Length: 205
Image (tube, rainbow, N blue to C red; front, top):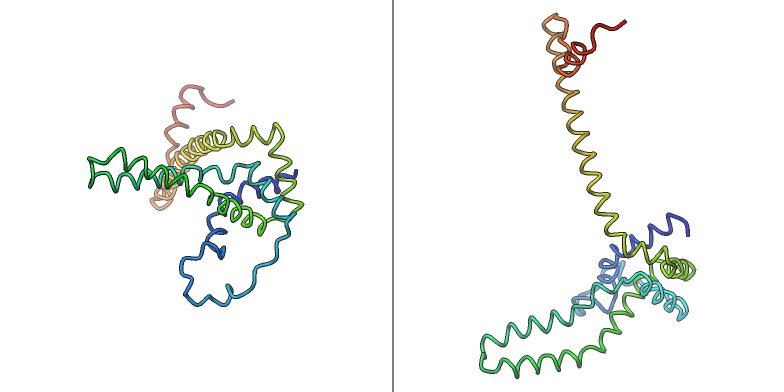
C-alpha cells in the first residue's frame, strides 16, 4: 500500500466525526429545512462497497472508541437516579443495567453508519486495500504502536523547536548588536560564544 493511501486511512479516523454529522440518520433537527447542498440525494452505496467498509472499519478499530458509550450512559443514569433514592440503590442499578442491555443491539446501527461514512470517503478497492494492510502483522503493529510513535515524534519536535528558538534568538541578538554598532559607526563586538572560542583556541593560522 502506498504511503499516501496509508496516511489517508489514518486521516479518515479524524474525519469520522464530520462524516457522521452529515449523515441523515444523525441529523439533529428533522423539521428544519435542509440547505441547498443537503437536498442532493446521497450516492447509492452497494452492498459489496459497504461490506468492504465494514472490513476496513473492523481492521483499523475505527469504532473501538465508542465501546464505552452505553456503559458511560448507564453510569451517568445511575448517578442521576440513585442520589434521589439512596434506599433503592441496588434496585436502580440492576434496573438501569437491564435497560442498557436492551439497548445494546442498537450498536449495530452505529456500526452501519460508521461503515457508510468510510464508504462515502473511500472506494471499494481502497477499503479492501486498507483492510488488507491492517490485517497484516505490520498493520496491526502500526495500530498498536502508532500512538507511541506519535508521542515520541511530538517529543522530538518539541526538543527541535526549543533548539530552533534558542539558536534563532541568539543569532538575532548578535544581529541586533551588528545593527547597533553600524548605527554608531563602530566595529561590532564578537558574539560571546565566539569570543570564548577564540580565547581558548588561539589565533587562527
